[in-house]
Length: 69
Image (tube, helix red, strand yellow):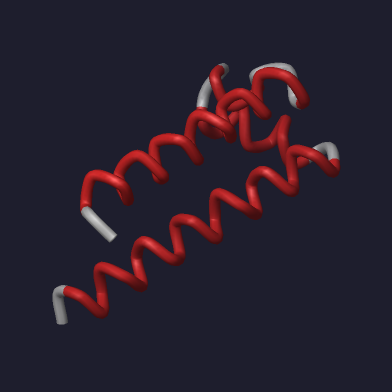
């Protein structure tokens, strides 16, 4: 896969997560990181979005750890 394709996929995932945040949790992550995470953690949809963000972060960290080892 080309690097530009991977970059577009990552940007698309973040845009979708941002839209889900705005539509389903009232834009809580756009308020501020700490306050937004507390607001998102208080409902199941927000918890699912936070879980997806953690999974993406874990995959990116693992990928960089393996690649730059």
